[in-house]
Structures are given as C-alpha cells and as structure tokens.
Image 1: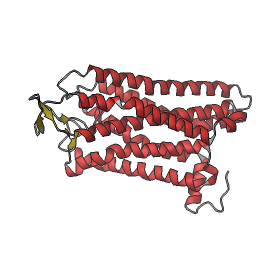
Image 2: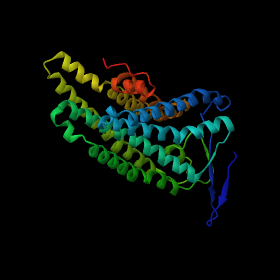
Image 3: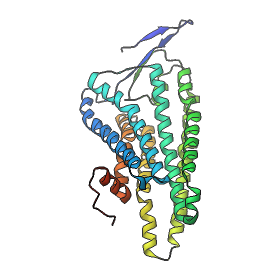
Image 4: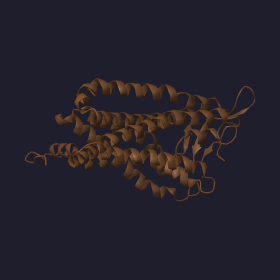
Length: 321
C-alpha cells in the first residue's frame, strides 16, 4: 500500500493523504466509465447554464418559480463540479491522492449541495402549494423577498448543520490505511479508515440525514398531499388537469431525487457482497440529477421552451399555443 504517514509527538503514525481507488472490483478497466461520466458532466454544465441564461434573458421568466429553478441550477452545477473533475482526474491521469484538508472540504461541499438541493425542492413544493391552494394570495405571499429569505435560510441551515461532519471526521486518528474504495470523500467511507472509535460520526451522519433530508421529504410529500386534495375538489376536469400539469415536472424530479437517496442508502447497508453498487449509485446520484433536472423542466414547461426559442432567435414569429 502506498501509504503516506507522519509521526506525531505521541509517536503515533498519522496518515497525511488519502488515496481514492475508484470503483471497487473494477480498478483495471474503470477508466472506460470516464466517457459516459464526462458526457453527463458536460450535459449538466451546459443544460444548467442554459437555464440560467434563459431565465436572465427572458423577462417573462422573472418570477419566483423560475428564480427557484435558477437557484436549483446553480446548486446542480456546484454539486457536479465538486466531484466530477476529481473523478475524471483519477480515471485519466491516475491522480488518486488527495490531502486530508481537500478531502474534508469535498466532504463538506457534497453534503452542503445535497442538503441545499433537498431544501430547494421543499421551497418549490411550497411555491406550488400556495399557487394551487391559495391562488388569490400567491402574488402577495411568494415574492422575490420570499425567495431570498427561504434561500438564505436553507444556506444557513445547511452551512451550520453540516460543519460537524468534516470537523468530526478530521478529529479521528488515521494511523494505517489510507486507501478509500470510492471515487469521492464520503463521510462513512473516510471515517471507516480511522483507528479510533467512530460511533459519534455514524450517529451524527444518521441524525443529520433524518433531520434534514427526512424532514424535507416529509414536508414535500405533505405539501403534495394537500395539493392533490385541493385539486380533487375542483369541479372542472380542465382545471384539474391544468393544476396537475403545473406540478408534473417538479413532482417527477422530487420522486427521482428522494427515491435515489433511499436506494443509495439501502444499497450502502447491503453493499458488502457487491461494494461497487453503492459506490456507482452514489456517484450517479451526484451527477444524474444535475443533468436531468433542466431537461425535465425544459420538456415539461412551455414558458422555458419559448424562452429557449427566443434565446436562439427561433421564436420571433412563434406564439404560445
């Protein structure tokens, strides 16, 4: 093992860097996965930048719903960029080593962007709840100030609650192994290398997941239960269809995001026999939502499609259907 160690004052060995081995079990040919992952990353960057440019360029999209979508695009770019350059460097240049400080910083960034994405989905669910259940009060409740406040509150929540994750990981003593069977610095993947007790790390990781993602997911689905109950009370089939269509893209992304989190968690617990499965799903969950989110919204939202057409000069003579 190519282990980089130093000796502390207490004559104990201390790892000074980690080695990200990539996908366990397929190290000899994992570089072939770099092409689809690179394409997904480029798609995520291009599609989300296009969303941001279109929202900025098209005045009809200067609404709270699209501001939230723009924030989601920024978060998606940040999440994908946090992990993909390092993964591609591992595959293309065999740049597997990462310092402890860089590893802990990546750990913080990944958890922050994941928590932020979950929080933005909650804000978007509240936006749709107010729009459908209280349409007359929507413009006075969901304003630009509302978007700024909820975004800052989510940033503050994530920033404070996630700080203990890398701090607790940094307090562990890494005395022998430094090879991580992963493509990124996951909390449990890193702390599993520690020579001392990691009970508090596991406990905080579980508590954080339940408190942040669990509460967000519960509130999101509670919002949609109220939306469905309100929609079903409408007398007009056309009004019901229109109300549901405004939520379809958002609901699709929510189901994919939270289902993927549950699947990744379950496979992580049951991944001893096939360790590549939870690692692969973890990486895909970090890059696929950023690539798919803008595509789903572009396909399902007419205003965005019109904005794209105008941005590329295709919509001067086209009217909305």
